[in-house]
Length: 49
Image 1 (cartoon, rainbow, N blue to C red):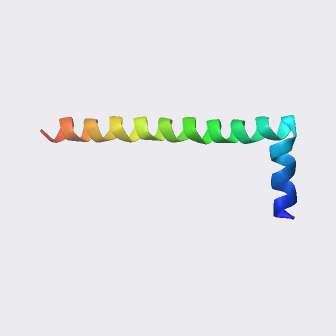
Image 2: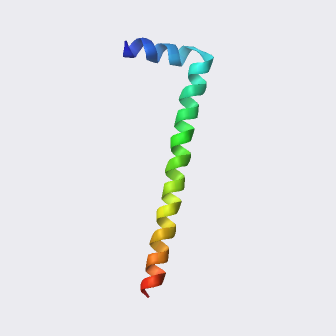
Image 3: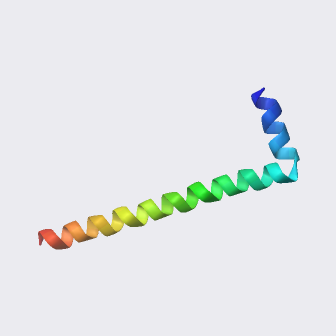
């Protein structure tokens, strides 16, 4: 069943949009969290000294 779903997603146009959209969503979400952690880390460093 999983291979059939994967084949459908890779062969249809909408499936490619779903795959690319999901990848882009999680990439942007990860970058936002990375920025949040950097800001929190730098503010803790500046606050401590």
